[in-house]
Image (cartoon, rainbow, N blue to C red; front, top):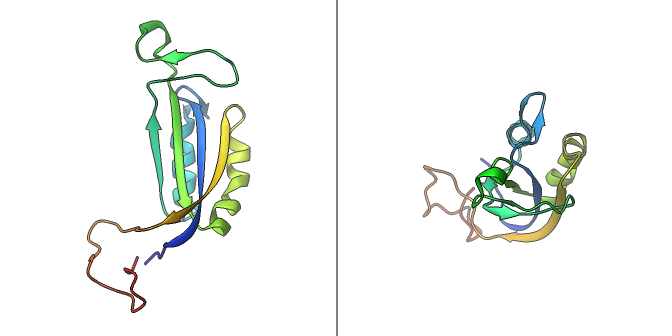
Length: 126
């Protein structure tokens, strides 16, 4: 069972929705590699408007520009595990932005976890 509480590292990857890796969405490849690497979790968020290094504004409000909306992939785990995963991102992300933030995990529990079960230290077992 994974335990993740306290200090952690969050990596956020900003790419375009149409970015690909071997003919499939790049965000899918990143999530699947994070899963294979045993990271605690990854989520993909689709933006409604934004711009990046190209300075082109992409928005869902204009049909002509709604084809390549911004996407953010957020991964949180221990600093050691996230830093070990960074070479994967270096290989995959040729255009975009990758940022790291220190964060604190308050609760990390999956479906079926008993919220009342304690690990003896006053923290929930995760």
